[in-house]
Image 1 (cartoon, rainbow, N blue to C red):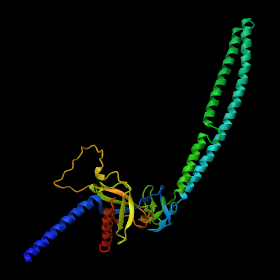
Image 2: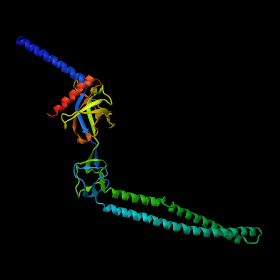
Image 3: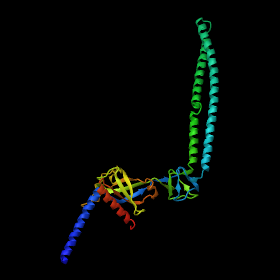
Image 4: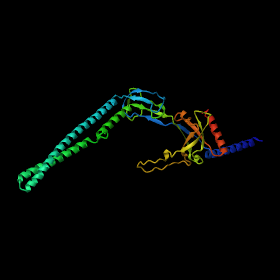
Length: 353
């Protein structure tokens, strides 16, 4: 075989190999897609004080494992203890004020009883005066005096009844349903709640991160001072849209983590992301902007899926942001074998890069 024939043979073999590899990648991308764009995410909870004050004690260190409701740091509680005492005094004052109102109600009720007795007396005199006037036994002037006294007694009873009604309204309900007591009780409970906020606790199990507080730091209400990386973790992978045509929820996935080269874990798809930020429209009052590109073939859009490993506790061992490679397996046994070999080859490459 001449050198030209050998060269032509190598060219044909190379072209054939290129075509085979090209077809393999096209088919693999459709039926057994793989992506290196996968990460482990942990929910991050911001630790934010709910009251303002100077920090007196920090009870944890950075990257320390903590449990839910564990104390993290304390804020000077003296002003809040004074606020509780003031609220307690206001509550006692409300009870004392109700006692004063009770005494006032009883006094007005006594005045009303006396006025009603007086009215009864004047009513009898008025009835007798009318009878005597018909008989012309008394003068018109005497009758007018009797009538005036009678009308005055009626007005006096009406005035005292109005005072009694106003006093009862000011007193309100009897017992714990009294409005003044409820207001005072509410202020007391709020003061106690604020006092409890001086000890800042963890909202979830996890590890502390980015600890930015030391004794003497002034903590402002609503300003985060540290974070807790929750133990719960989520594995997400971004695939090109066309690569997800033949997969669905429950499809098998193989995962290789950069932190554990050579190891492959099995999982399944548990959900598809509802959308990406590129698909979000903001009603900002402006006209819509069209996409413009001079490229004949645009960049493929990626969609996100969520994967759950068969070893549920494995993800919690990885830090938030850990990288992974995800291989999706087709339903066919031959395709699954090729896909498994593909992800194992990639996992071995992680020893190198």
